[in-house]
Image (cartoon, rainbow, N blue to C red; front, side, top):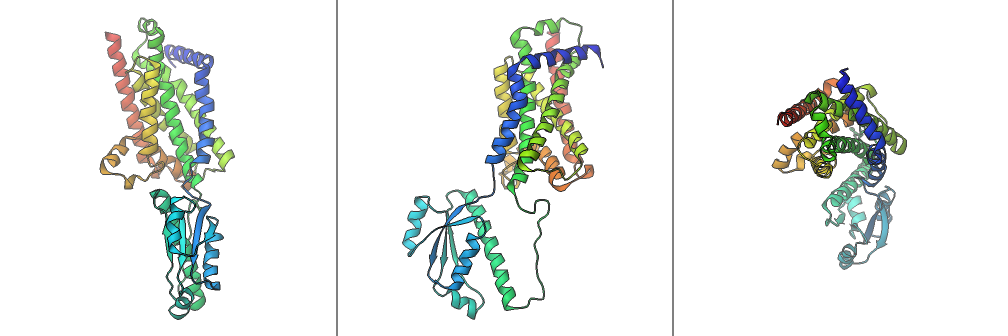
Length: 369
């Protein structure tokens, strides 16, 4: 390797070791984020308080209710005697759903083999309401299928099988997404302050008068953070395995190689920011806004991109985390190989190369002035 690049790399590592703040960001922050957010961000809901208006009061209605309470998602809060009690329960936030069983429920089951029940859901939080509705539909569909099987020997039976995440644990969906967000944030934060730090401390002039080219300066400052960010990624995945039982279904080496491409794009964003600001504080603020918000809101980490407005769907195409989410979820959950992941990998490589080229050109312009 070029001795000038090696000297800058050595200088950067010395600074990182001596800077306790950088070490804190590098080691402690990723671990804190993976354990805190991995435990806090859950798309599934448990302990949903349910009120019951049972006007039938028979063994059939009790059997239906037992399906809800034994599902693990619903907790029986109370029995109510009148519909006028429903709205006060919702307003006081004591229950999230009400199951109303009509008076002739048993008669409907025995005469028509079809019965109607009503479920009223608190929709003040639309996301929670949709999840509760899905739980209820699944419970009712399963119970209905069992009742029909008892009445008629059906020639066709349907068995559902969920692939890749058979227990539908949201942790297996969220934690790989957290890895993408954490790596983007750490990489951009670390590199966004590299050149800005030189400007702020006044050592940039010493670099400018040395016989070193802009490309060598940029590479010398980026390569240490590639190594550090890669080790961070391995540390976060290890924490995800220990803390949440996340196992990698696919090729670990492939995930490591494609993670380097993602880190390359993330670090290029940080360098791009660093060449355009003069202080570390401004660089960190811009890096946070430019990486965390898009990575969480526009990458598909939590919210489906297909449900977003057209303008946001267009903007999501330039968010690197969106493409790495496809890569890491594909390898960790589905065991995908490179032929199924070459498109997002190509985008990340092209994006990183373009940003790095622009940064070097921008830095070269400053050398000439």
